[in-house]
Length: 243
Length: 125
Image (tube, rainbow over all chains, first blue to last red; front, side, top):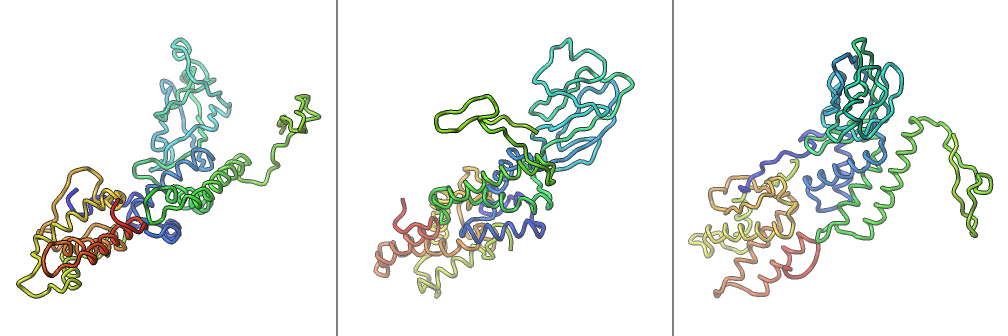
């Protein structure tokens, strides 16, 4: 610490119009907040929002041939359109030559050494997707569909995501600001209100994403008396989802 | 103006302090070194109360001394908190034990510093 400004703003010095609107809304709602603190809490709220809702989605296709067995999704993916400032939360679907591969936690050394058409894949926290068995020399096209979130360092949130989920991201940021003690903008009661809204908006976003951002019908449940699972004395039962 | 730019220099803050305590004519009642040190103390107290104000400078624990060498450097705390630091330096000046000072005035300015930073009335916690 030397008495002069040395750190650039987390989201850069020239925000887009949408991001500027977010900053201005937060500045007004949390009077006294500094830009640096606001941007840190916004990033944490955004990571929380996108990790849980998986509403920021992207897909990439790339040709894979032996001896390639692993694909790095860091930053986001080499070989396709690179999205800087984003990282993969989890693969939502991995296909090899249009055949969906099953996710597995781990495979044995023997299985990993086998060469054939890939059947399963593993995904680790470093963002590495490993195909098992290894693709043979004929190779094929790998299609990866993932949920993204902003990275902690030099994060980026595209305007289209920011605009779509503006209210949810705002609620999350305000929750994190209001719940801080000893600040001019501390407000435990409002923090609870916004936290509740934030959780609801994450659920809503997850639901919209699950429907493919369309208007498809929601999964429905058989009522308790029709699903054979029984109900308690108060009439609450466990529905069985269908569709 | 963006981020933590205050739009003020350290020197301008002390000029404003001198205006309020009516110490603009030389020889000064309060020497520059005294006021700069009071500003150092203000930074230390603010660092304890509001570490977020120092994010733009880096939050490492290395202390620094505000001296006249920084007179023309931009004050690195966000614009809306500049009055709090002016209050602190005035409070420190007024708490000196001499015939010109006023204890109640000192307490008022020091209390206002805390209130401006935390939104809470009262003395430093």
